[in-house]
Amino acid sequence: MTGHGLSRGVLRPDAAAGFLDVRKQPPAPALAGLVDFYWNPRWDLRGRDPYEQKVLAHPNVHLVFEPEGALVYGVQRGVFVRRLAGAGQVFGVKFRPGAFRPFAHGPVAALADRRVPAADVFGAAVAEVGRRILALDDLAAMAALADGFLLGLLPALPADPQVAEVAALVETITASPRLFRVDELARGLGMPVRRLQRLFAEYVGASPKWVLRRARLHEAAARADEGAGLDWAALAADLGYADQAHLTRDFTAAVGSPPSRYAGR
Image 1 (cartoon, rainbow, N blue to C red):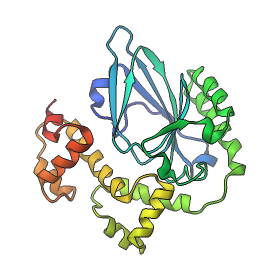
Image 2 (cartoon, one colour; image 1 turned 90 degrees about the vertical axis):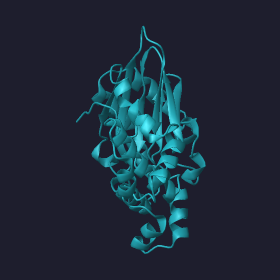
Image 3 (cartoon, helix red, strand yellow; image 1 turned 60 degrees about the horizontal axis):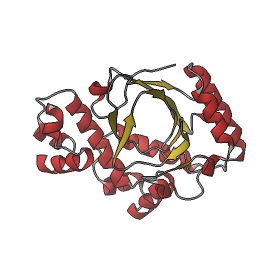
Image 4 (cartoon, one colour; image 1 turned 180 degrees about the horizontal axis):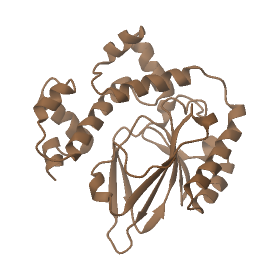
């Protein structure tokens, strides 16, 4: 299976549609508990000015093979900005929320808002894997190389049943932007708030409050990208904000412009 197009969280997807294509591929079945999918952005800006693509990131850790080298990106809590120029591609592994913990050398929160050399986590062999992947054009062949590398690491990973539990929990939150409060979430799980916060710091790399808020902002940005004329007061109520002003503050802090201005551009 392959997919094309820009994902939810990519800001102003219409502006990049003419020169940026993002292909996606699922991992091997044995990796499905750890990897959401592989992603392969390819762009061609030859003859055009460089472009800054902004992304409201999800609560995932990524292994990204880039021409300059392989990097691990922790959860990016602000707006992630990628400058694109010329023509090129990268290949990324999007780990399921919480699923990077078996590879990490400590709590995943230590990677938040950081990028580190992938060799620090996966060893020196990761660089050659990246070079071989980026030399290819066929997405299935690229994914097969990534599968082989990650499958080779599985026998050494410690068994951790909390990985699946945390992944399912975060996916429930991100699929339900109308889940509003951390104490509600903890109560529904029968778990103290402090334990939930520690679990997210250890496995996800962002707080449960951030994950809840980001899910709502993804919904707001997706609705804004549909065009002007949105009833922001109604959307604020639908997403559990106290009022439109609260949504406006959250959106402006995350995206850099008020929602009405963003939608009207």
